[in-house]
Image 1 (cartoon, rainbow, N blue to C red):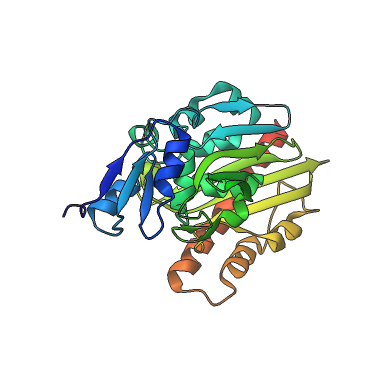
Image 2: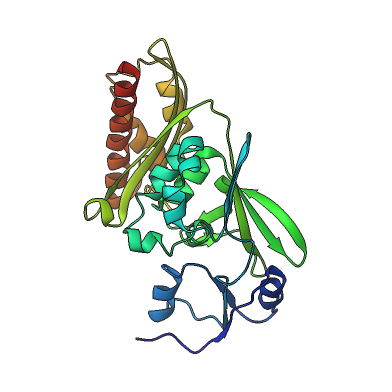
Length: 286
């Protein structure tokens, strides 16, 4: 099967992109890395009137590390996010999560903005963006707006991005309050599609969890923050044991009435959370 016919344009400026996207009555789709979009086009899951290639646009790439914020251009490749030494020092969980995405040759093409816009329920970058409290910056001919990552995706494959908008950058805060861990289980070892994942942030003092933030992926249409699980962790010894933790993850992600597949993914997320806690306990013991 091949894609249906569509117009193709590759502007070299952001203004050119915005003009191309501002096309009332037409479906115009931005093309970033293409690792998700091209298969959708090929299998005719989407049928746009036009595709706007972002790869020649200047100013949409780069990693800027400031004292309080890390700004990453939407067209920055995940391979660069993975291997950027200063970023690994500033936000190590972002680099480690990027390294979990598929194969290296996929990460060479995939982009941060493209991953957020594709909004796959178990994808690594949306999960970490929600956990870290990132903001997604969008621009159109109407102006610029910033949307918290937790409100950017509205469902599997859907976001708040308007048809005439393009994501230009993602801004991550650097608070230093929590130490982060990302872990996931994939269908075929480390290179398959994620079944579920967990991004865990902890502040530990005197061997006890003083603050926690838990975001699970793959357990529903969106990355889910689990405030009930977070509250249950506070005050516990980080070394455990953690009785009832897996059951708490299942209950909070499924509401006790999810389909069988969702309950399985939730149980996987619970197991991953216990493993992340054990890894943090090992670090505390060193």
